[in-house]
Image 1 (cartoon, helix red, strand yellow):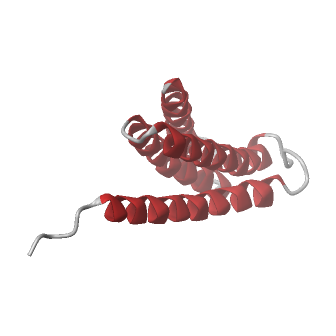
Image 2: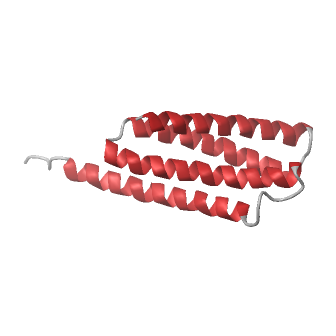
Image 3: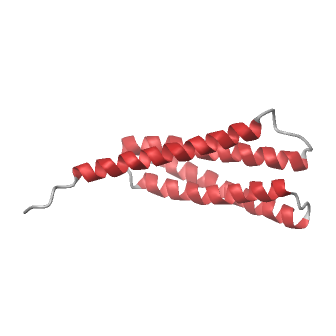
Length: 133
């Protein structure tokens, strides 16, 4: 599934942006906004790489749901971190409610991933043969 490579690419760019913002927070502007944006980007970059790898081993219908969740997670954290960085570098927000929308989308994506994983776990358990006596 090629979409998994796109998700991994986005995750890599998020990781690079996170490291860049960490450097900016350490050397240019000690803003807590930059530190938070950096942490969010780097943590979610790792999650994106993990989800991309999981997609490669998941059957197509379930992988499609996983791709949608991963893209929503990436969009949410990018919007959230982008708004925090804009507050430092542009002295203003990206647009009204950008951070809460991005944060909310990130939270909903994590919840959706939990639901997806629970359904995948139950489906895997139902496919197993009962032990023979």
